[in-house]
Amino acid sequence: MAGTRIEDERGGALAQVSSAMVALHKEQFGRGPRRGMYLQVATADQFITAVEDIVGRKVHAFSSATDPDHNTVFEVFTFEPDPASDGHGPPQP
Image 1 (cartoon, rainbow, N blue to C red):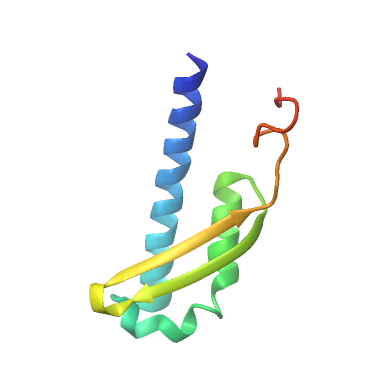
Image 2 (cartoon, rainbow, N blue to C red):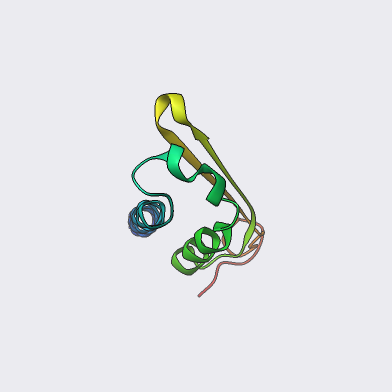
């Protein structure tokens, strides 16, 4: 079933991205978001590169935010258009 294979591939990529983000946060920011809020801009290229390498897509925009009151970090990536996988072009072989 093609739909299941695609979902499995996306789930695998999602797990890889999640692991990469956790590793980069530990490496760059220490144990919590309060410690490294000011370093996030300086290390954006590392986050972008990790996601591009895993997903195989070019990142168009990246934003990072923290909510220290709730110990939550948000990493948002927007990708460049890819007609072959965005449903606007012929499927890739």
